[in-house]
Image (cartoon, rainbow, N blue to C red; front, top):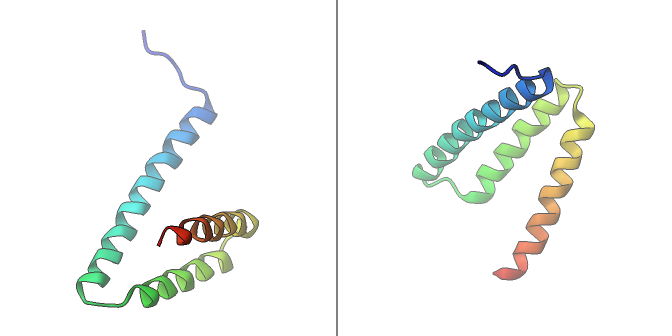
Length: 82
């Protein structure tokens, strides 16, 4: 007997899969840029510009801002390791 999943579970599965796909594609692009000897700060700047473009075309700007603040906080915490 097959167990039916509720819509929330299905949406979570799709989002998880989409996130894995997006991360893989972005990772490929970053590795490609690094392979062309593009400096890390330039890659990060290009990624930030892409994020800005996404924010301009979506209604999730508050969610993206929260994610970016969490990212900045994480970078601040890990920068003391270096």
